[in-house]
Image 1 (tube, rainbow, N blue to C red):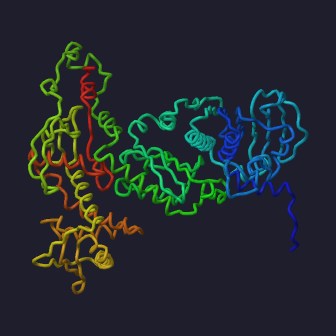
Image 2 (cartoon, rainbow, N blue to C red; image 1 turned 90 degrees about the vertical axis):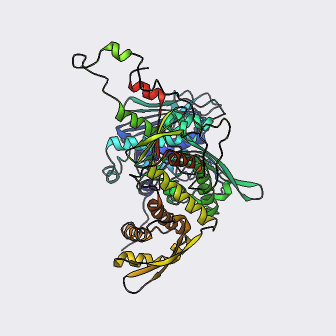
Image 3 (cartoon, rainbow, N blue to C red; image 1 turned 60 degrees about the vertical axis):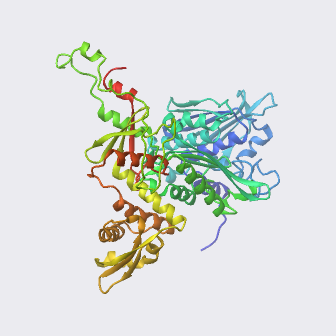
Length: 598
């Protein structure tokens, strides 16, 4: 078979398939060009999910007449002045985007260079173009793409519906806007305005203001601020800043996960896994945390030329960046202790709320009755209560009352359904799941003891012989060293059994046989993760669950208050080992709304 050189037009179409995967990829490249041109306002318009039209206008520095036709030639760029890939300072640098788009669409480029009196335009159809001609454009650059992939029908038929493609375009714009708070963005789809955001003008809280406008007030109000750095070498540092969501503010997908490195939106599995590992046992299975994080590194520390879409990067020291990510997020999560997202409280209020559209003829009360200043809260003074606390059964020490101290989780009023503690604080009431809360407290104590190599073992006077099914037995025997690391001394004992000789002292008089049986069953179903620390956390979580105060147990006032005080000083106590919330707060104001008093 004869080897032939492919024609340049076909080469461009093949290359376009790598660079421009879908309309949102073309849109991303155009927005990056606008940002590289120092634009402060970018206006986007699409039709039919970007299949029929993608138009991007900016107020950047523009392109000179002599460079307009050069802009659509492959590997022609203004962004590598010294022809070096070692120090890439722009979002674009390959000179591939415009030629790739032009090879598979009808493209019109209009531009006015900032110190020129005349704008110029160029039309390109499937890679073919004529002469540059005058344009009426007043500022910056405007690029319009019509009928994307019309020259490559095979790619066109694999695109998703217009609604899906529009959603991808919207996501790209949101990411670009989050990364560039000093730039204004407008976005129209099929004539409908979906986004209009001005440049942020307050340097103080610059990124938080943009996050609030794009990710919502509920996230920004409760987000945990992250700010940290690690030294790379000499005076160079890797820095991280941004905001992460509380573990209880989790989503079913990763659409609200935003990671930027040197202003570039990144989708890297290893970095995503690092972030998820920082949340570890605070998230429900299959749920995703919410975050918006910005990492800044020296440009010679990173390689961005490893993926056609520039969505992945390589670092000179991957371990350093992972450590920076995991350490910063873990530190942030530990700082919030018992806090849970207000979204949970809002959902609870929805379930409490009565239907406001009541037919007066069927109602068994009058308007006068509704307006009466009557409530079962009238006799309750909403002030923080202080109680003298005695010996703490969880920490084995004495906690003394501090003058003028108010307890965020308040003082226990009573127990409901032998599982929920009702507490009153200065804001309203708090409902605490006693089992979920104590489960987290137990886990954190065991984790702290293991990390500090201070796990105390208790020798069983009579070793516990436990018979197990084949699969759980194999798992327990395979992980005896892991179990030894957290205080268990377990050995094989004949056929189909193990003997437990020592246990962690924290377990006290817990049912050891049941703990081992359940641990074997749970691990045989879910399996063990690959990471050593993840294995440890999973096993500790299972054990903590059995050591905790069980649902259905009556607690006295002292025990309930002790649990609340422990939650207030224990990291991650806002959610149990499985990621479920441990408490719900309902303000007095919201309660009064339920009774139509406000």
